[in-house]
Image (cartoon, rainbow, N blue to C red; front, side):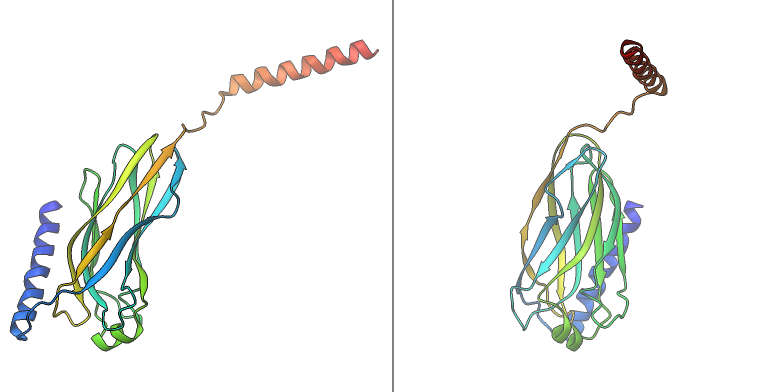
Length: 207
């Protein structure tokens, strides 16, 4: 699986570079912020928690995002990957992005990449200033603190003609406590019996 993912991502990068060179463009650098935003900073063992990866264009009306290839790393002893859901920021009129994939690379890393099929004009005019690229849902396995670290492999502008620079804001997530341990059926039976005995004793004393 990892070899297939690497091959696919390499092919996409080579294709993007070929488009840029054939069009006679020289890659330029623009700045945006990509942040890792947990929807809760602390959860309990056994809970699920979602983490948003958010792009912020910093109010630059001349800047829009047309593609990305990102990796999010997490503590695999504290969290386990449950799901990844993509946002709509690269699909501003509803056109499906292609490719649009995520892969569990193992060892506490999930990769997500997406290439918009929208026109540069639509992305420039309709893309929000800040939007969620994708949301990762985790299961909390055991108490501890997991770093949430983002690696940027590539970010492309709307026209596919430039590579964008990004400031990355990482985060962390703390898992506390232990899962509730249900009492065995025998314990419930014993407690019920003791409660019944106490009630019987009270009635005898009242008589």
